[in-house]
Length: 500
Image (tube, rainbow, N blue to C red; front, side, top):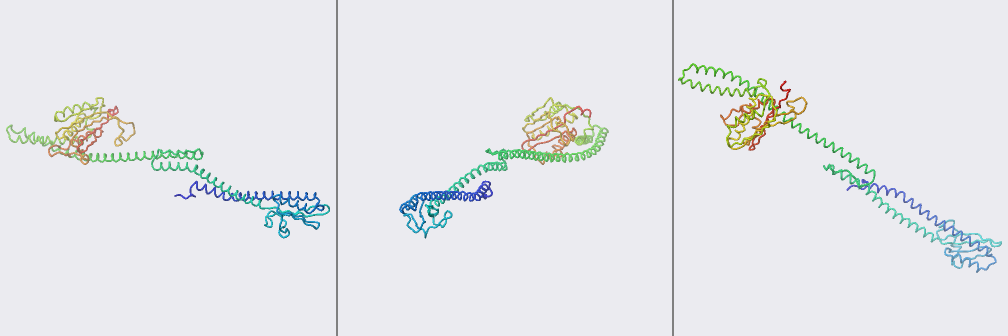
């Protein structure tokens, strides 16, 4: 629990109490002293006026000629008036005392110079009385108790009023403190809610205090600014993560392409050497066959040699196609839709009747720059590979050709510019699929997952080489048991391509 002196309401209460504890005692004693002084002054004024009135009455009465009973009666009237407690007249060798006084005045009564003097609760006042040629001394005593009681009552009432005042002040301080603290508590609750992640919370207060309204408005502006910065930072983080992922993918593609280029260069060199070896084998074998008679048994052996050499030469040609640069071939605008249809007519006959071939070709697709024969080989190899993935069983092969507009590939297009149009060829099968390790190696020459004798492992390597030479890209998506999808993307033909 927070300490009271560390809260706003607590500090307001402490400050108000400190001020009142310093001011109220002085104010209290000042007011009570003023009331007491007023009561005493009023008492003394009344006493003096009454004493003067009695003295004037005695002077008109002619005390010297009056009887003692008459003078005593006048003195008794002072006591009977209610405030008087003592009355005597002394002079001319005589002394008159009120008959209502029982004690000896000389032993107990003395003149007072101020209220409460001598501590006997009786105020004694002496005034001269001139009666004829005689000067008498009139001494009257008045009870101070009513004034003292009035003063005590003033003290009590002042204390009661002070207590009531402090109670009201504390109640008002509590209400004011609550009104001041309530908006701050609301802002604190909203701030904690925002800090916990509820960014939709607004910093508003239900008060008409200008300072708190302005503070809430400033905090709301700051909240909006911070939310904007937070969203910007989150977006930058997402963009950075996306860029990092794309960079990793591009690095992976680059390493894969460099590895394939290295393998292609090596395979091309070996293929050239093998081609140089195959040429004399074929020439000398054919020459030997021409020299042999028709019924010679050696001629059949030479025919087997020629067929094997021709098969080896075909493999060499595939390797050369994989490693060949497009600049060595004749290129021209190629109608992709026509080439795909023609290639599908060739491979359709070799498919089993249980295989469903789905064709979706957009006739409005633009042309691409390349070689029609090689592009047809790409289609045939991909479809053949898809059919073999079905393992001769039931399934479907979907071939789709469409136009797309994609952003420039930073791996190929270093210069900035608008997005470019491409032609996308998709070959999808419902076969057994491949795992990630197999996908990483499918474009390597002589890599195959089929049995020995079922394939050379050059089909996809040749496809990759042709697509790369056409400045295109090929990607594959596959999961075991979910089929495989090959996507070939080739830049669309543009006028500047022909000029180049």
